[in-house]
Image (tube, rainbow, N blue to C red):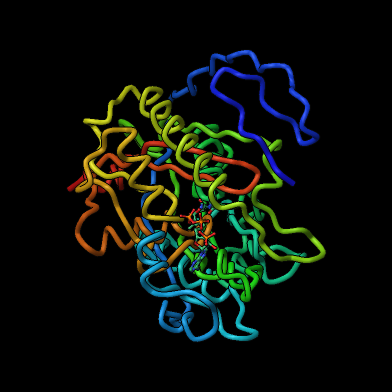
Length: 354
Ligand code: UT7
């Protein structure tokens, strides 16, 4: 099915090709910030052991290392082994995040897991991760928002903490895209990988915390990137998705900064969904974020859907690029379409206490 992109200001096209009435511009209410502010206090991540390089893919697909690196920036990706489960990897990442935050499993009130590739259709990953961690007092639920799932989960976690409904929320993004990729389709098989990232969200007397979150969705564009329930194979119109991704992430990040009362100059690091280096560079250029502030992890882990942002954050911290107190802008875009952006003061209270 071909889909025509609406021109700026034009009525958006619907799925059957007819023009829908233009949506009136909506003024978004500023997020209420009172009392306790939610922030990130710890991080963990985990990758499967199996490395699949571009050279490995050259052996089974009509592709080349040169094409993949030039068009995407990806050099290798990790994949779960045959029959290997995601839950143990996710549990490891969550345990590391808790240790990093100086928290124990029995303090966790909610385990919130973003995934589109759980080990079972039901139950979700979250109850198993909570069990394996020993978070027996926690509620546990999966959330499905494709590549934007980590930002959706962060926003939900912040709302739970700031409303007083939860004290400690474990946010985990756990993905095994190798399970739903068509391994014979070179246009998608080379792009995706498996991995997990997790953070601990709690409240504190913070200046910024998790601020300015902007989330969006446009179901009209679902056919450009989807996996059907029966076939369970990812299909994507790459170029179309690329254009939407740049536009949505740029606009959402600008709005998130504005809502947080900040400008691009205040951003110490920019961490976007790691789908394609060219997309990240285009969004950074649109926002006037200099390249030295742009975190790239796509060469190492490829597109791990919602796990890509926490994986990139953790790697940036390990590389010494991300330090407590830094202001980080986050942006993501994925199937739905769904997108999001937010601003985070990285481990702000750790910084304040140091
Ligand atoms: O995570 C959710 C969001 N996802 C994204 O944001 C992904 C968005 N899209 C993209 O990142 C890019 O569109 C791709 C990386 C998927 C593709 O890059 P592109 O520069 O848009 O390439 P293209 O689709 O226009 O294809 C160019 C050529 C085609 O050949 P012809 O028709 O010019 O002869 C493709 O058949 O490259 C060919 N091609 C490949 N060649 C070698 C497509 N995949 C491959 C491949 N190896 N793996």
